[in-house]
Each structure stands twice: as structure tokens, then as C-alpha cells.
Amino acid sequence: MASANATVKPGDVITPENAAQVKDLVSPGVFYAVTHGMHMEIVPSDRIEWPPPYREATEKYSPQVRLANDHRSLLGYVAGLPFPLIDPNDPYAGTKIIWNNVWRPISSDDYDLRFFDCQSEYVRPGQDQNIILDLEIGHYAGYNLFGRTEVEPMPVDPDFKQSGRLWLFALYPFLSPEAQRGQGLIRYRYADPNRGDDTWDWQPGTRRVRRLNEAINSSATGAQSFDPDHFAGFNSKVEEYNYKFLGDRQMLASAHAEHSPEETCPYDGGATACPEAWEMRHIYIVESKPRRDMSNPGALDSLTDVFVDAELAYEPYIDTYDQKGHLWRAHIYWLAYRDRPVPDARVAIYPFKREFIVGSASIDTQGNYSSMCYLPGQHTPEHECWYINMGAVDKDFCSVKAMVASAP
Image (spheres, rainbow, N blue to C red):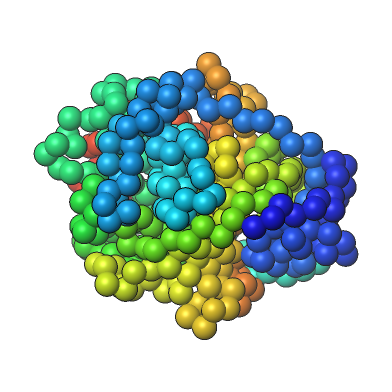
């Protein structure tokens, strides 16, 4: 796919009135957001460096990484980026880009996002925000057993040999609204390409742990539009999808966001974050389609277009399509590059700059409904929020026992 000719320049402000200028520079989902009120402030492009330990791991281990004979699973991976050099002519370029996204540099060991909130509302161009659901959650946390570069044990947690788990994820406790207080979710990903994820939740009403069907990870529930497979980009199990590399081009993305906490967009009813800085970035485009012969036949999307920043190995946005091939949901992520998540941080301060997700939106373009998450939350007791590769959480934190113990 040829690079698009830029029709914007630093200093431009993109609004619904001149949205046509960026139609070929963003995904259809982001274009929907702009035409419905989201403003972009175009800034100069700037380079982003990987954390030094991650870069060193990439240089050390990437030469030994390859795809398995089925061209789906990863062999020889230890830490760092699996495939730092992508050949556009490689028939398996799409699969390699998705594996890069799995082991991306934004966090390699552990992470704990504390006290964040997600507000759900209808997309209302030119109107005030009318919040339908306001969620506040205590922890969004994860622990990687593989690919560790900054916190011992490195590069692989010995537990991997016994459990076969690649990473653990914890989302708990829900702090508000009151009806969901104490709710939580635990999810495990396994190295076995034929084993689906294990997922459990805790519901305050029944006060019981429930094991979930894997299909729930691609389904949004309740009055919000996010699902676990898109909490932080494309997070589905790699082997359960087929991939097609559609090309690479220069496109707009928010990689040097200026606000933390993010600002509620006043022009679209609070559906997104704006105004915010957007810049031209080198983007890979990968089409993913669920394999109906795998253990997770319940994915609701017919296909997903994943837009991956070539430098970050992270997706600034994702578009999903329904079974009739119509655009359904747009997932947008705002990232900041700095040595601390917020300017007045006292603990979460790093010896080098790294990327932080400061905002994310999941927009149902057919129902004109959005869930906008603020990372950190706008009105939470602690806004330092992101503790990345600091040993802030361990395997025990990402367990059903810990989730249940946290519930009031």
C-alpha cells in the first residue's frame, strides 16, 4: 500500500468542518470520531526510543526467533521485540507484526494502573456530555512470565515451566457504581497454541466466582462498549486468528499526548479525548479474521483491522467490522512519551522515557455510543496511576484468591 500524501501540517487543527483533509490519514473509525466532533491538533513528528533494557534484549535474542512450521506460533522467543525487521514482501509479515504487538516495549515485566475511570455516553456532536455509566476501578494490572527485561526474575519466570502461562491479567476491584462495587476479572494466557485463555469473574450480587467462556473476551457487556480483547489494543490469542498484511503508510496517531489526565472532548458529548496532539507516524495495517476451527469460535467481529505503529509495536487505533462487513467499533488509544505518567509524580519516575496510555475510547459507530477511559482518572484519590516494570504486582496479585479477597 503506497504512502498517503500528507494533506496536513504542524499547526493545523482538524475539526468536523475540515475532516476531509485527514480521511486518508486515519482509519475509518477515527474518521468517524472526527466527523462527529473530535478535534485534532497536528504537531511535528518525533522519534520514540525503546527502554534501553528492552532494546538490549531485542539485539540479543531476536536473531533466534522464528515462526513455527504452522506459521502461527513463536519459537525461540525470550525477550525484546521478536521481529525488529519486517519485510513487506514476507507472506507472514502480518503474523510477525501481531507477535511484535504481543511483546511490545510499552511494558515487558509487570504493570499496575491504579484508580482509573471510564465514562460511557452517547456520541452527541456539539452537545454536552450526558454520562450513562461512570466506572471507577482500583487496579488494571498484569504480570508477564516471559519477555522480562527490568525486574527479576529475568528473562523468564521459572513458574512458566510448571504452568505454561505467558501472562496474567487482573482487573479489580470495581469501586463504583455501587451496584458493581467489588466486581473483578482475572485472565491467563498460555503458550500452548491450542489452549484458550482461562478467565474468571467475581460478581458482587451472587458473591461467587464464575468461570467464563473464552468468547466473552470479545464481547462488551453492560452499558459500556469495551471488551477484554481490546482493553489495551488487540489482545486476542494470536493463534486463534488469520492475518493478512495490507501494507504500510504514513498516518496520523497520538503518540505524544500532552494531557494527563486526558481532557474530556467538549465537542462530541465526551465520547473521546480532545483537543489532543496528533502526528504523522509509520503505520502497519494488518487484517485479522477469527479462525472458526479454533477453541474460541464466538468472536463477534467478522474481521479486525489493526493499525500498528512501526516504532512502538503498539496500535493507536483498531477498527472492527460486524458479520455483514460494516464498521462496528472503533478503538482509539492516546499515548504519551515521558519519564513519568504525570508531571508531579513522586514514585513512578523512570531513568528513561517510556510510553504511557493516557486515554482510550471504544466507540460503537452503529449505536453512536462510546466508553471513554481516563488513565489516570480525572477525579481519583491517586493520579500517579501507571507503575510499569517496577515490581508493583506479582503472580499472587493476579489470582482469583486475591480478587475475591479485595471485594468488600
